[in-house]
Image (cartoon, rainbow, N blue to C red; front, side, top):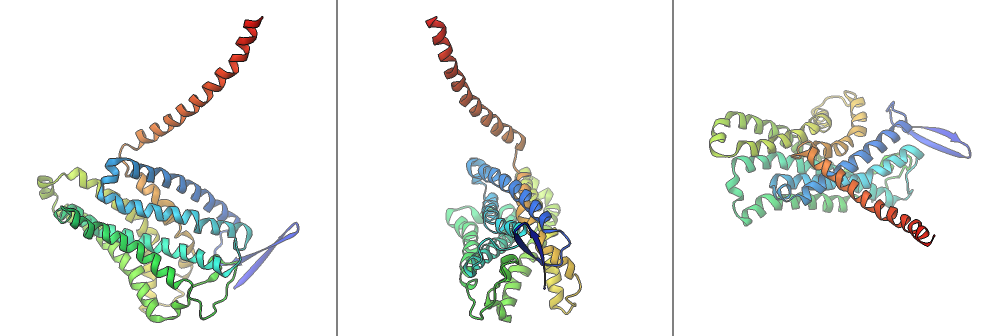
Length: 337
């Protein structure tokens, strides 16, 4: 562990050397711009999904809505703290409680997002090939809504309980992301293996094989699908899933594959640099997710145009009364003269 210090006027900033060649000031600007753009896009896509009745009623959009909310939470909690650390070289609030809360939000949003996308890869098979399983309200609750509720509650409850566990008195380093803190429960090999299997390997298998087999299944049964169901409707579901899973293929699956290789005996020096950079760029799963959803919204150009026109009309309507009010004194003066 090495620390570099940079003096500026009357202050001294300490920066942790994490082995990444990207300067902290570059990380600050890259994360700041990415977070702002992603936040704006996330709000726009959420607005479309929630206030457009057709999009809101689509069962395949519900998991996307929840993931977008997770991205929004991360962009309002975890990422701003990382941006602050990149700029000032120290945690925003230097207390153990803050570090635990910071770690909780990061772990919960990241792992829950992966689990939700993994479930979406499985649910698409049900929505396309077994839609009769969702024919009643009771079936929809148990097959569609209950898994989503369980996935979200699992992350909140499990990490809400385990994150504050620090009976081993783990130290806090306020110049490192998340204060270099992790719960003492991870000292247990059993829990670590359980987390790896459920949070890493299982999600990767569901995302990788679920999306791949869906495409193969559709190709093999395309003729029968065209005869019995509306192919265009389900094509949108498939394209939406593929656009999302492609993001995870690039940023999520490679670190999991390396972690699996390490457990099988591959030296940890193999791909160590990739893992280091992978942790930094893993946040681009949350940065880019809203844009992958944006590309699947129907009539996107028209929707953006309507919002811009609505904003322009409101601005015009606000300016016109002020202009009219400014003309009244002039008219009164002329009348008096």
